[in-house]
Length: 234
Image (cartoon, rainbow, N blue to C red):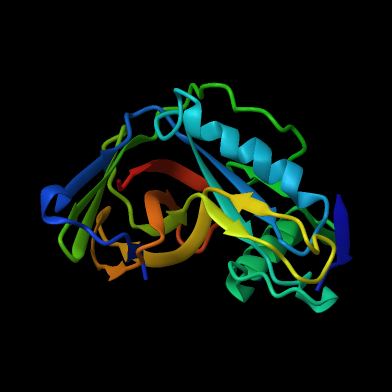
């Protein structure tokens, strides 16, 4: 575990004519959002990423939990610039750290449903039933709709991430110099959109590296997810 002092587009895979329309829909039961903050510049991260990769074969993937790997950029100063890192993902981790009143951030760092987690295990099924989140992709556009269990369609924030898989890198500097790194569930891009009356329309941007999509909603300007959904694009 590596720690620093405390200092925070929906892209889409190229959609073929055979798969122009894709629908991803959660059930009413809460789907967990599992986030990993990681970096190619940190020697402690490859084991955590290897564990995350194993979740591809878990039968509860997408329906029971949605994993994300956010690459942060604060290890780039060691000489290797992580190609998947973003200042936006770093800022997200710092927002979490501040909300938990921690004195710093670290990698690898797991977050489960907006809460710091030390457990490297698949989360248990939730008993909460916030409602159904549905995302429909059609050509270059997507529509989102949330139907809450209590029937009250309040305004929420929608977040949609495109995820990369089987991404291989061999750093030539930093703590992982010379290692062959293979990564999955890598966040390539995120679009944040306001959902008025729990509905939203989004224009897509293509990313040929994307193999899956993850979407979640939160209360306005909040980090903790209300509901999540995801699925394979190919």
